[in-house]
Each structure stands twice: as C-alpha cells, then as structure tokens.
Image (cartoon, rainbow, N blue to C red; front, side, top):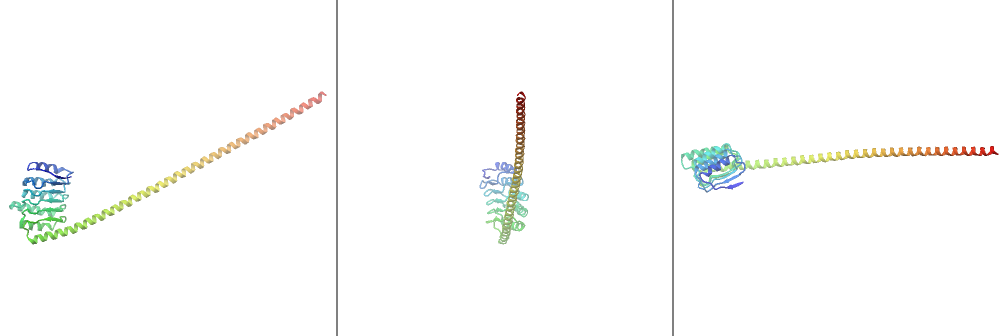
Length: 270
C-alpha cells in the first residue's frame, strides 16, 4: 500500500484525480522526478477528498507557490494526513511564493493531523520562518519539523523547537492515555468474555442438572410402572393358582361323590 510511482507533468494530474477518492493507498513517493509546480498543486489538492493517504514524498521537484497554496487549503480540511516531505523544492522564489507560504503556515495552526513536515532547503527565508513560528504555536500535533538551510532567524527556530517539544510531550501523554484506555478496554472485554463464559457454564450446568432431574424422574416412573406390572402379574398368578386349587378341590369332591355313589349301588345289588 506504499507506492513509488513514476509520473510526469501530465500523468500527475491523472494520479491526483485517482487519489481524490482512493481508499487503499497509504503512501505515495514521487520525489526527484523534476515535476513542475502545477503537478504538485494537483497532488496536494487530492488531499481534500482523500481520507486514507497518510504520507507524501514530494522532495526534489520544482514545487513552489501553487503547491504551497494547494497544500494549505487541503491541510485545513484533512485531519488524517500525517507526513509530508517537501525538501529541496523552491517553495518561495517571489512575492507570490511568500504569500502562499504564509497561507501554508496559517493552515498549520488549524490542522490536527500532520505529525511530520520537511521543509529542508526550500528557500523559505526569514519572513517565511517568522510566519511559521507565529502560527506553529497554535498547532498541537506536529512533532517533527525539518527547516534546515532556509535562513531562519535563530529566535524563530527557538520558537519552533519549543513548540515541537511541547507537542511531543502532549503526544507522549496522549499516546500513553490511549494505551491505558485501550488496556482498560481490553481488560473490560476480557472480563465481559469471562463473565459470559461463566454464565454459559452455569447455564450449561443448570441445564445438565435439569436434564438429570428429568432422567431420574423418568427412571422412577419406569421403575414404578415395572413394579406395578410385576404386582399385577403376581396378583394374576395368585388368582390363577387360587382358581386352579378350587378347580382341583371341585374335581376331588366330584370324584368323591362319584365314588360314594358307586359303593351305594353295589350294596343295593347285594
């Protein structure tokens, strides 16, 4: 997602149109391609519509006042772009360049995303350095600013250095706070997951106990039915035995009666 792309004055405009709505590329490097100021203006204007790109390597070209003006307008509305390298570009060569760099300086006071900016050897001059120092005190995110070989006044350099140090301190605290919040969020999420697991375990145990309760109730019911069936069979056997005994007794009685009648008949013949 980081690309070194060979472009010229014409294809740079096409690249800028593509970047306006692109959501994939994170970094573009078109440094040292001798691109004209208009190409830089196109590329910087793309930052107005792009919210994914975070880094531009634009050093070693011929970018000047148009690029500064376009970048200033974009930085006022783009809060996600974080790294810009403009080293070796003749940003300020005339009065128009001074005015455009003044706009760029003012945009830094409003921007909340840029972290790194290289203006090394860009011919900014004393007035540009003063404008940069005047506006940088309103910036809270820039932590690295390269301004070597620009003929800045030492007092302005000191203002820039102090503000960058202040921003670095704020950034360190902010990152530490974000890390702490992330850690707390992670712990909270872990506790939530643990709670859900414990709840699921409890529900599972309760479900198992309920199932076992049903199983035991079914077993008791089956045992009761078995005992009832056995008792019924036992009663049936007892009745059958009693009936058999009665039948046997009746048969014996009947046999005895017949035997007695037989004896009486013999006595009568005599």
